[in-house]
Image (cartoon, rainbow, N blue to C red; front, top):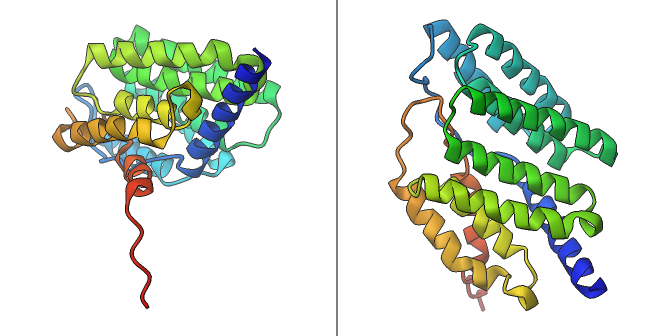
Length: 236
């Protein structure tokens, strides 16, 4: 049991490090169906671009605050709360704060996700982001939390896929989980390769329903796929 816990802890740390290395993916700014005004759409698009362009913990906290303010402007739109939660989750992966502080940040993220759910947001996207939040919780204390949160990540991802098989993001999260799971437990890069290829196919076919809706992950996937490229033969 001790060996299992230590191995899962190692996997959790590896996954957290990978998330830190690639905090965001390109997103196409666009307007949500319920966006009330052009000014609101412009504000949201600019803030999403800012979010997807930074890995600085302080900036991520500031961007989360911007989305929280946007939620007061459009109280019926789930997207500000979704992006607020996303910014806070990525902040935890990037931050060097202590575990208690990170847990409080994740409490805020999950509260924002709950508000987005009450506004009838896209449940597949919300579950995928919830899976990221679980991964962030796990990374705070891998030895104590691996057994609990690894299973919760898998359950959230499975539900997200079932709700919307065309959504590529839960497939990316699933592939990441397998990629950073030790080979002795059925994980590792080779086991993850077909899952990454599946995610790649999903991204190729994916068309966002609107310009502000979630559209992240493809850049991260491209980075993951580089591990499968055959190194060029050195010139003699």
